[in-house]
Every structure is written in structure tokens, then in C-alpha cells.
Amino acid sequence: LRASTAPAGDRQQAAGGLSAASWPLPSTCSVVVTDDERGIAQALAHELRQRGHSVTVLRAASDTQELSHELYTTNFADPAAVATTVDAIRRNQGPIGGVIHLSPLRGEEPASGRMDVAAWRRRLADDVKGLYHLARAAGPDLLAWDGRASPQERKGLLLAVTGMGGAFGLSTDVAPAG
Image 1 (spheres, rainbow, N blue to C red):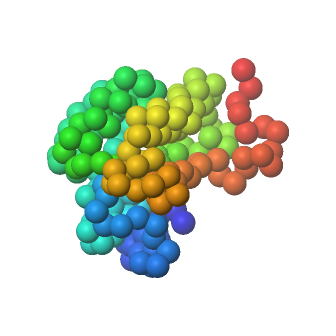
Image 2: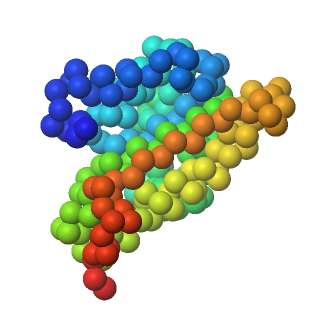
């Protein structure tokens, strides 16, 4: 699904396919969704808010800002910036029970062949290392988001997508030469 070209109803259907039985998090936890800038993150955030979750959308930028109670920017390549942003989200929204990393869907697909080496490296820093920094910062919450769960009952969610255009692992020329 390419939400930038799909009708609004299709974007909503992509997020609305979650059934209460299949969704692993109770409504008492906060969820962070990284922005794909195509509408999927917004549709998913809307669906999760309808289920009672507090949801923060986190958008890639060169600096950290709280644009609203539910929208922040951060530099995913900077571990300190990501940690500062997660701390602010935690203060405003409560413990983080889920991280859904959709930002690899934004912009140019790395496998498109239209990225130069510098752009490829920026995407890796944002999408792969950024996920690592985000998981590290939210990790304590993801491991025990409600503070009462035993290790067997902890249900933190970390979900990530890739934006490799289906070529990841199937093509030898995904990364640009250089």
C-alpha cells in the first residue's frame, strides 16, 4: 500500500484492520509511532486513539521539538536527541508500551536506484540506527510498561517496517556504489 497515492479510505483500512483480539497492548499504555509522511502513521495513530491509547507521532527532523502534545520531531541519528524526546514523551504521555517504526516508508525508496551514497547513509542513520536509538530509549518502558507485570506477562511492542522496495536481500545492487 502506498498511502500517498491511495484513497483516504484505503489508508484507514490499512490501520483499521487491527482486531481487538489481535492487538497485544491494553489501552492503558502509550504508543509512539514514527511518521512515514504518507498518511499511514496518522491513520494508525487515529485508530489507536479510538481504542483509548495515548499516541505520539514522532517525525524525523534536524532538531527536537514538541509541535503539539501528540507530535514531536527529533534527529533519529543523534542518540541524545532521541533519548531527550522519549523522556519528554514519557513525561507527557506516561510509560511507553509500544513503538511502531514506520519512518522507513517515507521519501525515496533506497532500492529505487535514485539515491546517492550520501543519501543512502542518511537514510541508514535515520531508519536503522534511529530505530536502535529509539528502542534503547524506550526499552525500560517496553520491558515493563505497567510496572506490575512479571517477566512472563510483559507485553511491550516493538514493530518496525522497512522501505527497501521489496529488494532487501534479493538484489546485490540495493546500496549505491561508493
